[in-house]
Every structure is written in structure tokens, then in C-alpha cells.
Length: 617
Image (cartoon, rainbow, N blue to C red; front, side):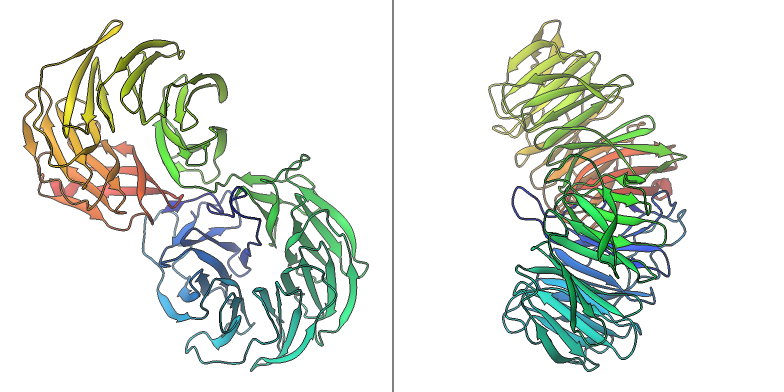
């Protein structure tokens, strides 16, 4: 199973302007779908559901749009290359006790446009699809989902089309809106150009939606205006200017067609009566305004109004209640570090947030809490019973007690790794080691004299990788000083990238930049095996089992491998465990026969795995 905060890759305000995110709702099964990274995620609307979010990861490029078929049986998803895939969603929502990474079956796939697809719409028969976006020769395509046969043409636009919708009842009508400030109305099928309506919006139009009964059609855009049309003829009816104090990015109707909600960059969700076009309710994530809280997506479900903030938060509102009923913290960046302490799991991300996940009855709750953040990449997290220590590329070492920041220390350089010794915290910089007490008082500063990529700590022993000599240096801590040992490990074939010492201290596993491991005996510094060689690129993290018999390893090659000390030639493997790459692993449980562990990835996803060790017995 996979667990993921929503909108792991929404538009980043530091690099791009806010854009509409079309969240799709499956009324039949009460679940939502959304694109993120190179994946599509489906999750139950119920934030406390035992059904875990599921990931579809068969797109090569960044996903840009997703839509459920009205039947709930199929999903259409598209990416920035203009490719569209239609897949069976019936395996999604399997029993929550089942651990499965089976990918849904792709029923059909087509190259629709030469650029990003922005929006997808199904007809009520779940047989016809319209996809629109950015292209060189056209801005959209109408087709039957199974054969790909054309059932009309998207005409009348002179720039990128941002959204499309199909009237739910026969006779079918379709509407598209785009950057050219135009709404184009179509009759069909086959869908044919009927009219182009211009002059009512003064800036790009971001979203368009027919009411569930087909009577109304509403468009919203960056000009802050709401424009209402006749759903059957497309004729202009009325307009409300300055409906929000910022651009409007999304719209969603209530089932009775008498009201709808809009999401805006002014940080609010507003509810509107269609007859009077007056606001009847306003929903806000917080009273203060910020770029992070711009609302870029909204969908009305049976029980909630769900909005998406630019920072990735998924906000659950109950109708008429201005404050969110629940908030699922999201993040916009890859996960970079993970640490477990009892029944609590901590994860850090490349943009700085640190999330706290609670484990209940051997399951991770899908709604994490936010512990705090660094202003940059989180390098590592250490967890003890009474505190949490984190290090980031903001050159800070932070101490958290009772979920509050207790102390922050400025480091002399960018940290590469942090580790723990009895009553001590070790920080590795580019070519030096700093050792602190548990209260972050600096105790020792030691110049290595060489570039290091990682270290392993055990009792008073420090094993540090030396990139210059492709070897491991042995250091010991003696009071207020560090002493270099004469013990020499045989050099590796290429620069070392990661080192892990077993819990019993007998073995040291060292991975090089090619992903190959050398397993050493700690005391004699002799080679135990070099057969752990299944990775094809850099290893990012590895963790030993408590009995020092197995090590789970994940790397940039997206592969997950379980190595054995006693049977080094036998390996359990799972390729493509995470898109882009695996950045962290952590054991959750282990009894010698079975175990479970968690992985985090550069795709921003957290996954939980079960493993059976009987193959090694």
C-alpha cells in the first residue's frame, strides 16, 4: 500500500505562478483523484478511511490532468507531453488489509496533443472523452475512449485551452475556455463548433462547469469574474465582477444545481446561489493571507467541500462551517529523510517541512501532523524518546522537544549527515565532524583532512568514508578529542557514497557510487562479501534489521533490495519501487520471519511494505 499527502507537486510559488488543479470526484465510490509528479493518486474522500491512497505511476512525464468516468470504472489521466492513458480503476479500493503494488490495467492510450493536456471531460455514458490543452496544430481532441476514433473537433481558440466540460444530459453540449479569454460552445456528438463567446472575461479563463441538471454553465478566470450562460444554448445570461479579491482558479457544483463554490488566489472558497449570484458562505483555511494558502482547486463531494492550497494542503470543509473540519498537510517537494521513534514516524522534505506520522495498530495514519520546518533541504532526522534533532541545508541543527523548537544552532557549513552516539549527536560536514551534546552544546570539532560522503557511528567508534582514497577511515572518541585508528579497510573500486554499521557492530556495509556494496568485518577490516551488487546507481539509504542479518537498500535506480549476510547471493528485489528514486528506508517491525518497513521517495511518496523472510530459511 502507499500513503501520500495530497498534491505533492503543486505549482511552486517560488518558480511559477499559481495554476488551476482539476480535482476529479467519483460519486459512485466516493473518492477523489489528482495528478502529482509523474503519478496520479486516488484516495477515499473520508480522511479517516482505512482504505489507503493508491498510486498510478505509468506516466513517463509529469502528470497534468485526471478525470473519473461517471461510471467510476475508468480513469483518464494525461501528462505534459500530451499523452493520455485510460485505465481500469476497479483494483483501486481493494481491502485495506491487502498489501499490493499491482498497477491498474491500461485499457487504451493515445498521443492527443504536442504539449501539456490541461483538462479532461467524459460524457455521461462514460464512452466519449474530450481532452484540451496546449499544442502546435490543435488545442484539443474529441474521441471514443476504447477505439480512439475522432468524434468531433475542438475549434475556435487561438491560445492554450485551460478547461473543458460536457453537459451531463442529452442532447450533449460541450464548452471549452482558454488563455484567449474566450468560451467556445459545441453541439454534439460528434462535437461541432457552435459559437465563440468573447468580451465577458478580460483575462484568461481558468475553469468552466455545467450544472448537474444541465441548466447552467459557469466560467471563472484570472479577472476575478463569474460569468453565467445557458447550459443548453450557451447564450450569455449574467456576470458578476470582482467576485473574489484574487484570480479564480476552480469551480464545483452542488448536486442540486442551485449553488456552486469557487476557489481563489485570495485564500478563500466562496459559495454562490446561482439565481441571485450572491455569496452565501465563505470558507477559509486561515484568517491570514499568504501565497501558500492560495486556493487552486475545489470539489464538492457528498459530505465535504474539499479545496487544495498552493502549499499542497487538502482542506476539508463542511457546508456552512467557515473553518476546515480537517486538513491533510501536503508538500510540494521530494521526501529526503525518515526516522522512527516508537509509534511515531518523522519525514523531512527538500523544501524544509518535517511531518509527523502516527502509527496505530501497525498502520500509519494517512493524516500527518506538521512538526516544523527548515528553510531548505532536510538532510537528516534523529529521534529519541525525549527529543527530535534535524539538520538542513539552511546550515541549521534544530532540537525539538514536545513538538516545539527548543534550540537552533548554526553550523559552519552544509551538513551531509547526522547520527547519534550515547548522549552525543554527530554532524558530518564537507570535510569535518562536529559533535554536540543532547542540548546542542558543541563538544568537539574535528578536521578530517579529506572529503567525506557519510559515516557510521557505534559506541565510541566513527567510521567515515574517504572519497580521495576510496576507503573507510576509523576514528574513535576519547573524551573531548577524536583519535584516528591505524586499522585499514581494503579500498573500494569507486568512491564510497554510503556506510552502515550493523546493530551488533560486527559488520560494516559500504556502498560505492555505482551501487555496489562491500561488506566488511568490523574488527579485522576484512571483506566478507562483494556479492551485494544489484543496484545500478547510487544508494541513497539502507537500514539493518535488529539482528544484523539483513539490510534493506534503496537508491536512485528506483530499486529496492533486501540483502542477507548468511546468503549473500540470494536477494529479494522490487524494481521501480518509487518513481525518480528512493531516498529513505526505515524498519517498522521485524521478528525474524516477517517484517514491515517504510520507504520514502523523490516522488514525494511514503510507502509501507511487508516482507517474508522464508526465502532465506
